[in-house]
Length: 309
Ligand SMILES: [Zn+2]
Image 1 (cartoon, protein in one colour):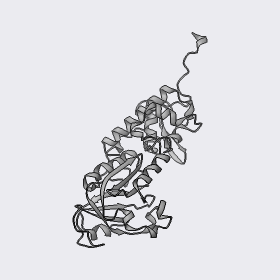
Image 2 (cartoon, rainbow, N blue to C red):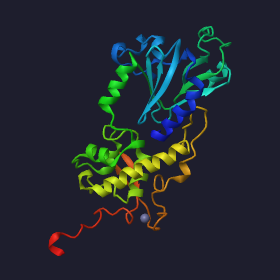
Image 3 (cartoon, rainbow, N blue to C red):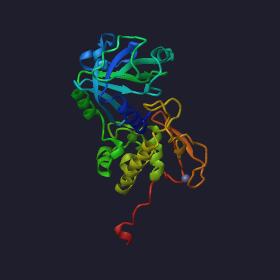
Image 4 (cartoon, rainbow, N blue to C red):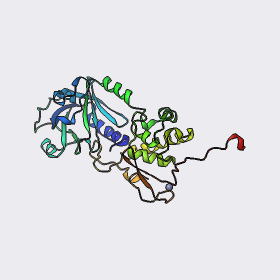
């Protein structure tokens, strides 16, 4: 499932193709890929094409955590969720070829802002095309009445962006949670952008057992964890994310970080650091992999108390 580095890769690679350009909705294959919000009610059929950026000029692409959106000059916003297998990319293939590919749910023609709008579903539509494809359909397109509405929702529901998380912000958002630290890291209200892959990787780098209660972490461990989260995410961002199966960036290319995973997907294999067999458990319904030797359940030994000095 795409996490912060993968979504970041999509935003960074798509931006040069779409920012400052007009988009015209050519094709919407099925209404159930829409998640209508606000004034659109819950009826996907009632969503007008204008809510899906139609005839808008893209002013910017935004990312916060695993969320991303396109904002038009007239402040319309469309959030694009990749779910498990979603792809949002640019192609210069002809429309009939693009539409023939299975699971292609939405297609926009991208044009210069003052070019004549393409007639709907025209085979002569201008290139390039912006495509949303999602085989398993856990992803969706979420139109917002306005960009400020969307941003207010993000502010209310998302914690700080994980790429720049500080020790102070992480400590404050973890609070005194009794939850397992891994479960807390997956909570987007605590920290926005970390999912299963990068939570396991950051906990391994920090030598923290995934089942330790959040509140049992010492300040120094929280600082180490914040640094590990920033570090692993920055490296994954630089490598264009991880492709496990379907993920591609806005140019249709896979990420190159998958070979760098130290624990994720390596349960039962030897730890790169100590050769102990990596253990795999299920936590919050997700597979969690860690090294029982490098990440002890009990955490670091207590510092000597006053009495022993
Ligand atoms: Zn180890």
